[in-house]
Length: 64
Length: 171
Image (cartoon, rainbow over all chains, first blue to last red):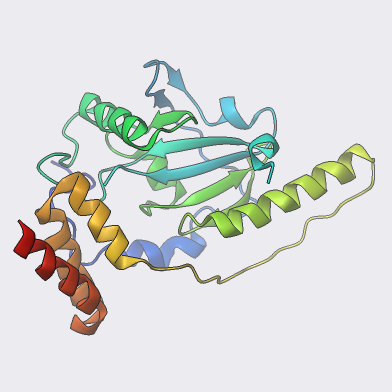
């Protein structure tokens, strides 16, 4: 099992990711556009489907 | 605020940030999609819920933080990015987007410039662990407290510990 989907909340609480964040995907760069699943329909979609008509606000998260 | 008309809002589902027995770390994409649907139902989401692959490919590409928000323009260029989702700065960014759209429509020339910003957000730790307990029970709360104490020391968790001690007396 990869460490991405951890079973317990890690003691370091993503510290390194927070420190790295300013240099990952800076403003002005093109966002990645990997396929995603629309939870309502099961269809494959991409972020480009949503920003094509104008700006898109992308929030990341999970239930817990 | 008419922010709903300024941009399309979507939510991208990542790994389970605080796994619990009820909502464990994902073992399959189906399980991830089920958790995402549970979130839509519990919180009454109206916007599209988009689920990243099991390995978190998109999440990694954007920086892998648990609660980021990005704003992309019509070309897919990043124009706003935040390490935390805070409606206050998102509202400011959308007001700016409205201004820019107005200038474009009026055919006035605009030029990009660069800003960095370090805003403060309200940190309601007790509210957070209370919600986390309601969703996932005691284990994710204990793990979160342990991580906070590891990073910031016991003084940082005083209020949470008081809440947790009272809660455990109720149970």
